[in-house]
Each structure stands twice: as structure tokens, then as C-alpha cells.
Image 1 (cartoon, rainbow, N blue to C red):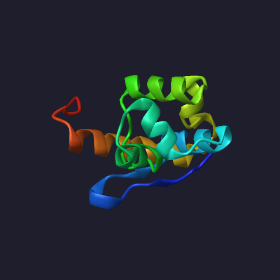
Image 2: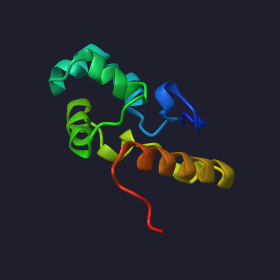
Image 3: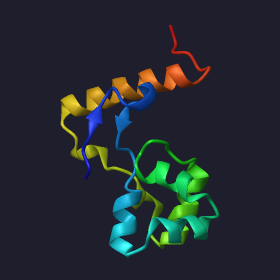
Image 4: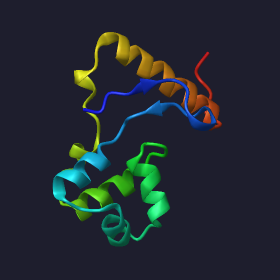
Length: 108
């Protein structure tokens, strides 16, 4: 499953594996370059998605799923396999990142 729950990463972005794009590409025998061409994005952009440095929009996830010919659900990490501690770490990291990177503020 690619379980990497870590709160700190490059540029204070949590290094959290949320997508399985790399695994799906490997399973289908498709290169990053092939997928980038099919979905019409720069290879550097796709690399960011594949390495979980940036998460694609939901629309882009569907486009990727169509290009790779998989169910879109196969592109997401299955969180039911995480331990309770890992789920809590992931929740905290996502909350911290979400509120730091957006204008959205938590309810008080």
C-alpha cells in the first residue's frame, strides 16, 4: 500500500502517500511519459502527481483512470489498512496542511 505517514516534507508539505498512480502505471506497464502525453500535461507535472508531492484534482484523477484504464478508486490509497495511530497522524497532517495552504479556516 505505500504506507508513508510523515508530517514534514519539502517546503513544509507533508510527505503523505495519498495516491497509487505510480503503482497503477507499473501494473499497466505504462511510463510516466506515455501517461503525460495521453492526459496532455507536462511530464514534470505528472512526476509531481506520481511522487505524491502534489495531488491532482478529482477531475484529473478521473482523466488518469481513463488513460490507464483502471477504476478511479484504484488510484487512491486504501486507508482502512492503516493502524489507528497512522490514521490519527494522517488526519493531523492533512488538517495542518489544508489550513496552512488554503484560506479555509477550521471551525472554532
